[in-house]
Amino acid sequence: MNNLKNKRVFFRSLIGLLFALAFTASGLLAGPSAPSSKAGSTSPQSPGAVLQGDGTVVSHHAVTLANGRRISYTARAGFLPLRRDDAGSNGELLGEMFFVAYTVDTPPRAPSRPLTFVWDGGPGGSASLSEEGPRRLNSSTSIFDDAPEKNTKTAPLPSQVVENPDTWLDITDLVLIDEMGTGYSRLAKPEYGKLFFSEQADAESFTEFIRIYLRRYDTRDAPIFLKGESYGSIRGVLVSAAAERRGIPIRGMTITALALLDSVMRTDLGPAILFPAFTAAALYHKKLPANLLVDRDKTLHEAESWASGPYTSALVRGNSLSPEDRRTVVQQYARYSGLSPEVIEKYNLRVATEEFANELLRSEGKILGHYDSRISKVSPPIPFNPTTDPSLHLRGNAMPSLLERIYLARELGVNADLFGSMVDGTYLGPFGGAWPPTTSGAWPQSAIATSEWMAVRWGDGNNESYPESVLEAFVKNMDTNRNLYVLFAGGRYDMVTPYSGMDYVSSHVKPDARDRVRVLATESGHDVPNDQLHQAAREFYQEVLAKPVLPTGR
Image 1 (cartoon, rainbow, N blue to C red):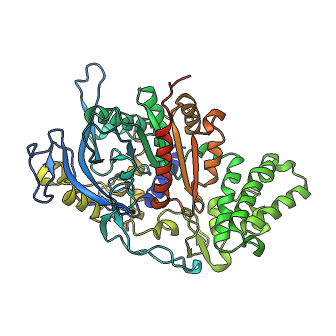
Image 2: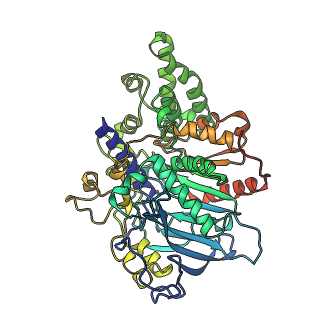
Image 3: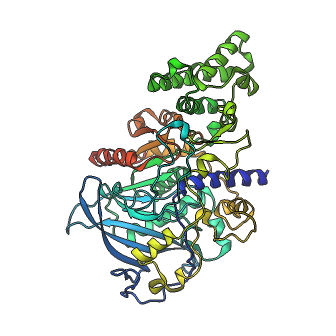
């Protein structure tokens, strides 16, 4: 049973991270020891970067936004130690979390800007070059051609680190955090993995990071926001709950690729929540009747209404459906999904993502990507495998490059000149594993068998589960923290975290909390385009910050 659980957790981590880090680079330098250079020294590799006494390096930059506005900002990169604080521990070091903070330069005594803590998914994703920052990895070619029938074009590797005109710095200051075991974040001892590598332990460690950061850099007056994607949505919910228990006021969360519904998706509601994503895929590939292809939005609305109404009712009734009612359900399922009645009956009205991905384009000899159903490849029907899924493979070659490491070293000053042996070992890339993995074989298949990778280590020595479902934790936190607002964003072509799940979650908070939830469905897969999200986030932050701060608790 534990092996099955570990395999499920690993594959969830692996597939989520392949997508989230498709344009993330990795490099070849890191290791847990104190900086060897003196505070105040500068790096010849990064002119202007100055090592501080707190183990961080500070540098100054500017970025031009999409509207032409130029913003000056200060970057602070380095390590924040997490220590044991129980009686008799002597403040024993448990590990150091690496972060990059971007702060817009403002006049003295200016009002406190919002401060957003950002992390990636996985678990196992480092955040050093997340899309919210002022610099990002660039790919010169879209994965899509103009014509849908040519949607199997392979993207080139990202070639450079460039300015990000859609940086969130026009909205908020940023702190991008590498979770423990990824990037430069390091355990003090391997056996401390159980203090970090589980849902509850992970949330507590990130909350402790936030607490220490706010105190150390005197930002306790700033409105605090969180941003996470995929597994990062689970972390966001649990961190916001832990922060409230510890007296840290969280004003808002932006969550993309919502992943709070594991328990719900295993019930009769799961196929109904997933179904509209099937309709979106069938629309894109023109597998629906001609009259449904005329008005895409109308068709999606019809499919959503049918799924949440008659289809859900049929799933709950199960074998008590009359033959006539069952035929009606099968006909409607076929109409809005593009699948044949025979396939629908074969899977007892409950077609899973893998089965749909294998069946929709079977006549063309193709399968669909789970994380972006617009992407297909020539293949016979096969069991899902994250190393061969077309929507992961075509997001870019996941093999690490040096771009992220070079950016940190040359532009931010995170290099051996300033940090000594701390960056003179191995930089942990995708999955939080060293490169190359010691297990022989072609990467990434070989990563599945090696215990070095973060996805395998998740749950390391700690099988304790969170005391309630993440959805329950979210509902409870929305009830007790009346200042908490949430923006959900998800792609219609994502069949792993289906977009209908956002409406399901928002409809299950208490009525007086519903007005504090915003939902954005985008024309994307698992990876929500930052230009669309940036605009929605700007409006979201403005709305939240205009609200009065209410007393919390019930």
